[in-house]
Image (tube, rainbow, N blue to C red; front, side, top):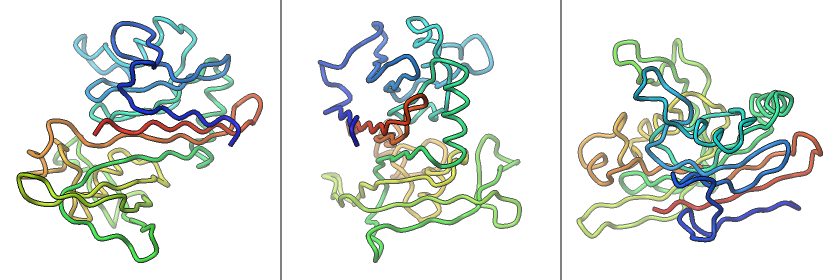
Length: 235
């Protein structure tokens, strides 16, 4: 692709800061912004005065026209796309719903996950609300919505404290709430540090959720030029 912007590391000192609160703008033009959300920060405001600090509010201090296109879970880090006009927002959101924007994630999961026979595997498990444990979701073959995730093994590691972990690349085909976290748990390999779906050793192995949005591929909303952004995780 012509516009391939690769960020060497999320903590690189040469990344542009827009304010002292660690929000970086990796790309900007008159149609869109690409930012890097840290783990532990909301994407958009939540309910209550204690949940107003979020990535969109911080970005809008410097870019008042910035509009949300999609979200990342509070515990997830990585690349986020924002529009700079209602027209661009509509285009990008439609592109997302039509699966024309490709998003890749990197995660570290518990245990020794064996690579699929064809390099890439497919998790095809419907997801629905877990009404008894909201806001959790669950695999629900009866009432769940179709949910698909492509995955492949990047590396297998043995921790010094014992036990194996596996680094994986995840590509959501659908975009259900908690899809990647729930699909990996359903495989028997929860993401490390996942306070919602991991238990025991898998939860204790990391103080944060080891899930990072590492790649965005899309067509520019005004020019249709291919754009490709990559930023590896710090873990």
